[in-house]
Length: 443
Image 1 (cartoon, one colour):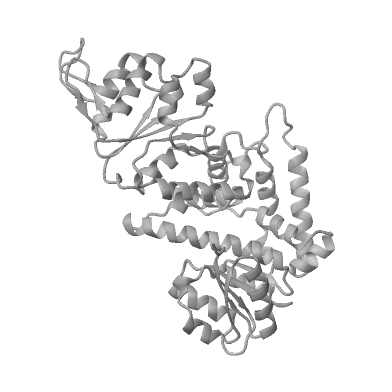
Image 2 (cartoon, helix red, strand yellow):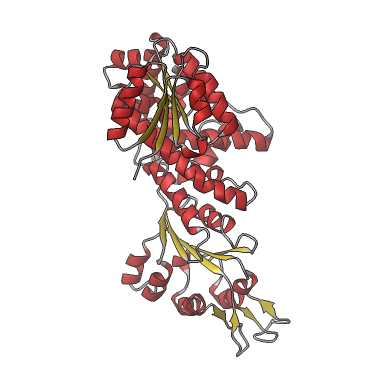
């Protein structure tokens, strides 16, 4: 199976032949052209996973290629190849929508890594397009922000599971966005027109749990002045989200298990069972298998829920997403409060990235909102009683970001020259530039 279909455009025939040989050996399908206009006319963009184009060519240049594909195939990644002195031009092209740029002579293995990411993005875009057409343009990526492998895999799983009527167990720490994932499974699936009913199992008192969940008949108990439809029945045609399911009392777990297995409920005060048409999604912040082995959770309910399990990574496990998330939260907060968005300094992003964020995405969002409101920076990110406010990882990250920024300025934005000044591989430098949000300074 091909790793992706690549269109390679360069006016130098030797480079085209070399690219065909190396990328072909690496598992890609490659179509190359030395004349850009012929390439645009001859190849259907729907067949492509990525376009690689030189910037400087006679007639049409790389920017023209980029603009063409941005107009006819906005989701098709375009990677630009630049010679010395073209970095500022390429950065401007990235602002116009280019996927990435590489300086000549480029490292062949690095090109393969860039194309792998581009092809994966293209495949994900195709999967999402089906959902957008079905759901009136909903954007899964705008809900689950991040380009880390963990988030790409999670979005892919949601796309695959949304239309499959199977119950799902979502696991993850507090603040990782488990309800966001549950809503995405509902909104992008065939049950989107039905109700999404969220039940926080830790917040419903045990004394009224059965009535809330299953409903009751008039006179079923003191104070039951009328019949009440339970929340499972109310979700007809939709999704029931059982949040913090580990908090559900053991005595009630058997009744919920029966409802999940039989898709039937029996309201209090009645002898008649009622069918329910719902999908169950449960969420937990603990290891339910360990809880069941310890006797604190019913094993049969655990195994019934865990047919499909989605694990949500903590923020500390996807640090490359922190800068993107923080920037997005700042933008949303500025729009919400109708105030100017603050400038985010590289050193600040470095400190944010160095944090462990025990409160995960929820904590990061709160920090962004405080920054937008001008309430001052939070106590040093990741600080705790056991970690000083200005911790060693924070100071190292700030030092590294400042050193990279200075090297880029001294090298007039050339990543190759900056990498040589710093004594690191260019690929390593590019990864750190991405991590610390310094891409705009590489020009």
